[in-house]
Length: 276
Image (tube, rainbow, N blue to C red; front, side, top):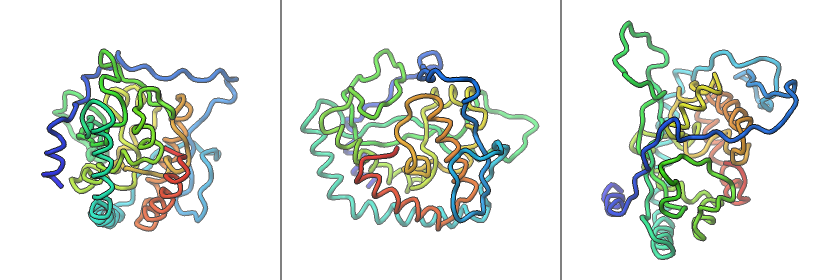
């Protein structure tokens, strides 16, 4: 797999440099102050999961320590066999991307990963810049035209993004553009299931606007997740807040059974072109 990616990476386009000033949050819809959305606490040991509209606010959410090893093993096994099964499909997708638009087949982008330091206290923190987690290079099949972000300005992705190529629209609707991230799972950057990773500049802005946002980084980010099977593309800050609430619900009750359940729920989402 490493050799295959290296071959495709010969034409890989690196993401443009970003800055906090270059990112603009989508405008929030006009609404009455009393209707403002709040993140809520959901009991972690329930058989049915309430929508994020309970009565208690999120305070602190931590993954169970005994869930880390088991969920990681399952995610690696699924990713390994997933790559084997999906290899022919990935080859077809790579050829279609290559033949239908100018630019690289594989697109790489820096994303913020898991934060292993959240439960540790240090008298002296040697980090000059706290990015909220360990940055890593995430792989995707290119679904947009090259130079889709002018002047390095991060642009909020839309459900029907005009920057998408014809084949890219299909890849984004079916989520096939995410298949190369199975390699990220094997590398240890991601799991199959977890909160979706975000770009450093966008992460910094969202962390300032959503106090609970940093808690998402307490587990490895995922290709799919509880938020992705429950909600569509983000359209405003309120949408992000709801997704954060779903992510925190997942972290609080994470287990092998929960991961397998979300994986099975992802397949209908891909077929119906919903979620994410």
